Image (cartoon, rainbow, N blue to C red):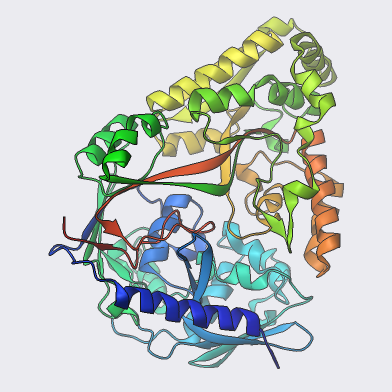
Length: 569
């Protein structure tokens, strides 16, 4: 068996440094150790079914998998062992054996065992569940066939060895397997509690009272669409390094109200959404009451088009045409968007994969300059007459015979803030003025009705985005594989050559080949107008000066607060 010594040594060093840093801290702690945050309420508490950034934020604090990610004093991601204490990899790079932490416990005192991990990984792949992140496990032998309903759970190469050990065997070596299985969908579960709740007809998916937790905190109270309280998990194996007693989360939708709460020190840490406050809050930063941090984020915001076969091209009937989609994409002045709505603080996007994402040691964007930023595309984007002609050509190909001025494109939003409304009005102005068509903004009162509209194809386009889960272009590129777990949320793009390239990238350990596959695939997506890129985010964080010990990982949750603490102030 061959140890991955470099990662193991890095993990061990990180653990010793973080513990030493905490021990050496001489600041006087506040008597009350509570952290106050704003959050968006969760649709579910099921780690296997996790989908959204707000779910990652909470569930990574109340649950725990094989690893946990912090940042060092330079802001660099550092991965530490958590539920695992080590793992081995066979010489052929196919079999991974995980050795678990024997002192790990659930919040009801039960040990966290290898059976909990095996149950979770098998459940993640259950075809009847339809979990969106199941595809991440496809390199495991038997996984893809089982998840597609063509195989059996008995054929999965996921093996319980004893309570402290389990193993998996891959069909081919996977260059980023460890990056994937450290994610939330691979966290352990208590199948006994799930089965009991479902047998009684209870809502285990979203009822916190039916859950147990193995992370630094537990959910101790929740008022739907209002608030959630996390308290320290007394059964957590590393509880001596968890100083916070309580974390109070509250739902506050309007950004102006969020700002007022920060200014009144009623919110301790925030990822800023309304970026006009960057300049407004500089006085607090200068005075030392707020600490500012900007972080390049591996995220991409773009417009998704309704390309689903069942959607018939959206309400306009035109979205299945690549020329129509490209005309819309190029009509949007993303530099202007960045200045108007991001205060010039983010990076205008002309492609899918953001900067700082690498294949091996090579940054993807350095190897593949953004297609829509090339001279030919910039020339087309700057000529409204040519864009309108491109749109009309595509519309005629799609079978439209009427007056182009009568075309109505529909976008959908729900519970919009003032900022959301302004952004969608900007979309409307840009598209109408350059393409000579009409844009209708359909507003829904809540996310449930919006999802119903989305799932019944009542849109031509809407704004979407994706936060990278791990450092590899695959985390963005897999969104557009035909029939993939997330394809239904991103317009249903389908291209046979794209799928071939992604399959080839999955099957090789050669990073040069993977890079070439990803480059060709991304260019296909853009040439086909599969998305309309908008911006790559630079996140803006503000913390009260008395909040210490927060990590801001590049991948995963927005911030990691399990080792945060409050100093006397």
